[in-house]
Every structure is written in structure tokens, then in C-alpha cells.
Length: 93
Image (cartoon, rainbow, N blue to C red; front, side, top):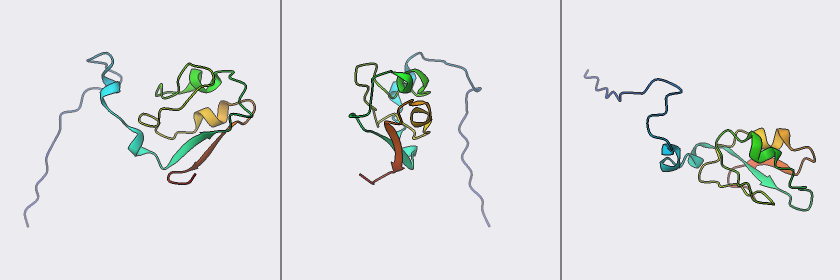
């Protein structure tokens, strides 16, 4: 039985070789849950923008999620003081 493995050289963690390179890697397809904002509840406090680890939330008011980069971690929903953001399964409206 033959085993074929391909290896890809990985960079050390937390090393940024090319600033801004995350914009080249749309990571939104990774998520199974996505944030949905109820803009009637949103106070534009910007906590979601501040705590988003992927910079997937705009700094405009009201903030909008860029689903091309959102990984669905749920941090935005957890930090929202008025619970305007809920996490729903991907594909659900």
C-alpha cells in the first residue's frame, strides 16, 4: 500500500511576513455559525468592531459584518451589551 503525503511549509505562528496579507485570504467559508445583527436593538456602541479578532466588522455606524472574513467565532455576540447580535447556523436566515 502506497502512502502519498504532501507537505506544505508553514510559517511560525504569530509571524506576519506580509502586512495586510489576511485580506488575500477570505476565511468566511470556515464558519458553521454566523452573526446576525438586529439593527433595531443596535446602539452602535462598536464593541463588536473592537473585539472582532478578524477585523470582519466595519467601523461605520451601524457596524456591518463582512462575511468574507468572519469565521463565526461569536465574540461579537458575546460582547454586545444589548444582545443585538445572535449567532445562527450558516445557511439559516
